[in-house]
Image (cartoon, rainbow, N blue to C red):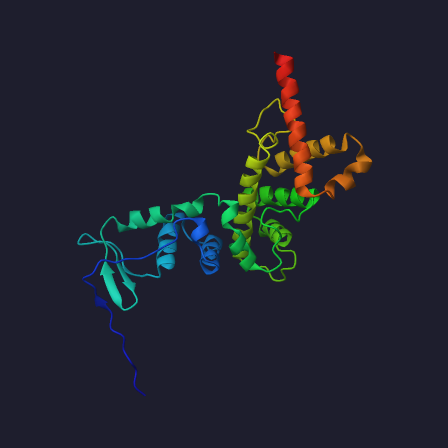
Length: 258
């Protein structure tokens, strides 16, 4: 049996690669790659370099030395890069550490599993969001994968087997929604004010629970028999009412000070 050898040769041409420059540029396959790397145990100082190589479909051959930059392989060709190539590569994928805009995610989260809820969580009840937000705060604080799994099952209700990369996908999505909600309901999600009873005093699980309890009391007007109805209300209907209450409360405080 003959074995065909593929010879890799140094190229005299400059290396040209295309990598996504923002969340919206990712394909579902690339989104899975990003999430898989976030789920892997990769040193922080190596993450961006590895991500760039994977997105650019390059294979590292040798690290930078005194005589030249790193050596990479693309297809059958080998390239020696400039000494500053590593820094430029990391800069080109730095956007993955920023909160994704929610508008960039529909085609990505829908490809994770077909049961994905609406990207802005219009399908969720206020109670389901409250539970997911509590799990989110707990996961950020502790890294407990069971808490991330709760978010996964909220966002993709019919998913059966949760894989490691699904957890970062859920966190990316939920972070994007929380950022979007802050713009949609600015009075409710304003910067923390020690004198504002509606504002969360922090992002810890305990602070989230305290904030949620205040919100539920505001919506029920203190009627504990109405709590179940409030939690079952559509998310955005509840947030709209809470935002109006927060605005009225701030206006009342300002009028008392003047």
